Length: 255
Image 1 (cartoon, rainbow, N blue to C red):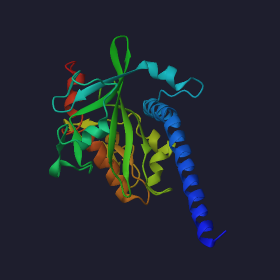
Image 2: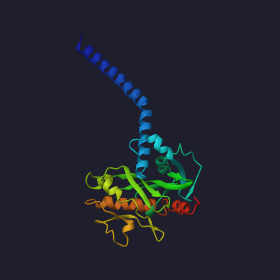
Image 3: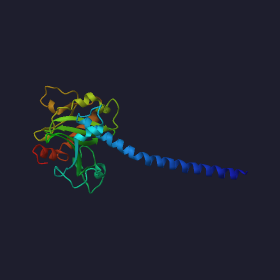
Image 4: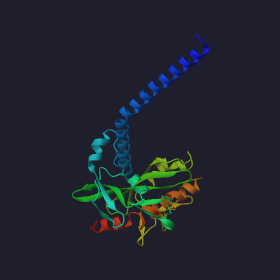
């Protein structure tokens, strides 16, 4: 057999192997996609429950999430809307669509780029009244965009909890946003002071006897830019370009 024939057969075998491998990978990706989507949805539900302080380790997430009602809010009016099917709404895609979002310009303190017109919110109701409202939040830290949920009590002003489920901040520094001890400080804090979003991180440790202690959370040691980023994203989403109009309406029963 000539060297030319040997090379030709080698190439044919390599091409056949590539085709087979491609088919295997493609088939696996298609078959695994439903499971991946289900796991992603389960993780979202788990993070919503955790932010609201409702997550129980010995009860299935699906079962626990039945107490949550998912709704859409028009951030331009601060009112609930039914113009889009909540189960089919892709909030991330809406933020990238110029027809479904707004350019924030100088108001973009959270550095989100564009803000979607409609946002998902998650409600916990008891005896016909809203007991908790959980809001999706995001914004730039030092190295990444932080994505999380902020839960408020039924008064739409007292923090029930906060958690970030995705970020790329430095472990041990900005990554301390995942520290349960730090996250526990948010519980019971107040959002609005004289009608403005006042909640945020400070440099150092909060003086519990200070006049503004109710609106302050300890800064992240050695992570000044992440601390500033967290403060900015919280103030943005609780401010006039975020959920403030909705929360105002919620308090007076007009959402």
